[in-house]
Length: 170
Image (cartoon, rainbow, N blue to C red; front, side, top):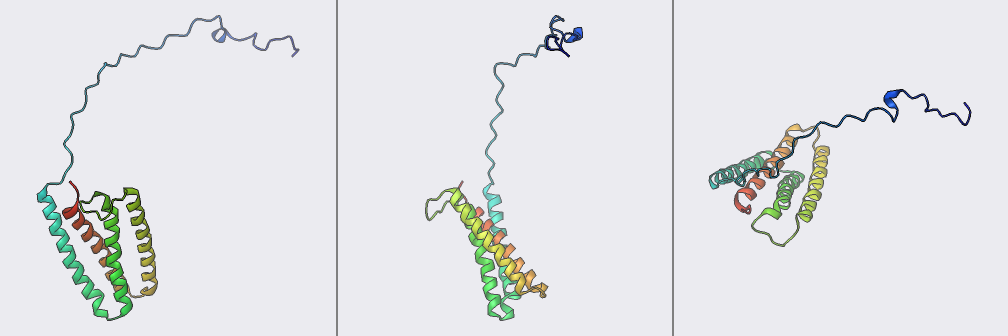
């Protein structure tokens, strides 16, 4: 191909500039000037009757927690078991408290949600470390591990329900 030849000379008619103008796009119906607003929905709130049921469930959880703590932890008589049992109650309580602190009526110090969730996250990481340590100490004893896990789950649920049902800011 020489320099004076135009490689685009033999372009078919449909692609050449002299072809028909492209078809116009189909017309889109006009949008109405005002879109009707959705009705405002009432805020989702738990009625006081439901909160009283949650408070009752929290109280039941605390009693059941005490029974599991006594049967599974206190009756062993080993100091190390007491330490794990008490930490298994305190850590979930603190995690629930710090996670929900920004929404509670009673706040000891004015903090931001980010700060309290950060502390809750650190405590959660500490609890995960605690669980791994517990598993390493009590590995062959499955019942003791089950008691510790039950204590931690019951403590978390009971404290979270208590905080929500009694101290949640409306």
